[in-house]
Length: 306
Image (cartoon, rainbow, N blue to C red):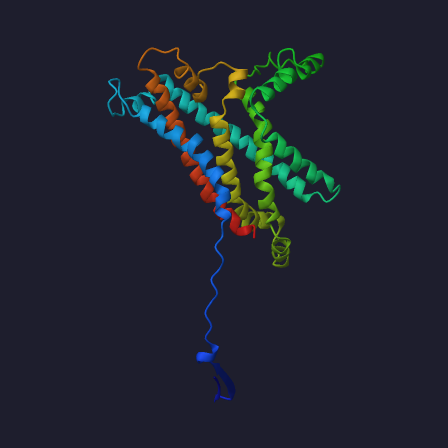
């Protein structure tokens, strides 16, 4: 039925009754989730099962019983020094990647001409961010090794890199190598966040008498902060867990991943392999914390990317 009545000069129409009642049609059942089964199976077999196996071996004492002695030993002596060095090194490498990656992403977004330059930067970043291991190590040895092309060119101009202390056994040398994939990865992370900075915000700041410094201090940096922090955590995890590139360039045991390979390589006495599993367990914990914080910060950053 349809009923109308007057309320303070307004005509209000009420519609109701059995004739207007209609059942809401049920949405068809979706089977799209079946496409996730291969991914979930891969995740279970190659991530969950190995992680459980690592913790099972790490949480055993020398007698094979449940205990935390191996986990404690993994943070003592040279093992503790390796963790501290790896954390400092990964944080420094991530900071360099965040700084230069953000500047490159902002330049790519700001440049209007030529238009193909942004596509070129994005395409190269997608390729370089996934390059690592032996091919990357070989490329840098050919470029910056003692007999590398760039090393000889600089030497011809009187600049001796290795005489100045440069080398792939040093933190600075490894950071240069890691920057090859850290900076492009940061570009891919930061581009959507910078695109989320709406021109209307800058115009509103200018209409209110704000300067460019005011805009970045009150609007730009606060909006980008979750993405920048999330990118730092992702680059930290990327640098902390890298193995093949460092193994090809240096044999230092100060890096946790290389020390882990020593313990699990079969050249240790009986019982010490538990320390290797403990190192792996602590690495999993550190990576899990970093990735959890990254996930939280990414959710915060996505609020401005709508």
